Image: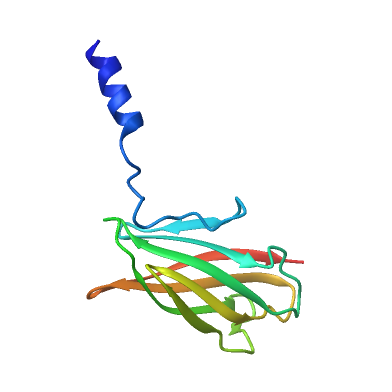
Length: 133
């Protein structure tokens, strides 16, 4: 009986991420995390094409369920040792939500997106790779 009560309490408890949601809409997105941060993001439009500008919708949270600050976003091609030809702009939408405009992958290959986040004095760089054909 205690096990049933414990399971019921666990299932009925409010979500741990209620005040810093990772949902980006449309049921699509990627999540990268570290020991201090969780970052959910998705491109807009969903399909990234060579040479076409796209945006990133980003939700940045701490592991303590607080909004984090997105400090910088960039993308590089490690094999070619260069980045994008454009500098993206970050627009804060409040509560750890951001829109990054002006992303362009100008050639096919392996791209690495890096996102610098911080909360207080502690900052980290989280990254994710894309293969663009």
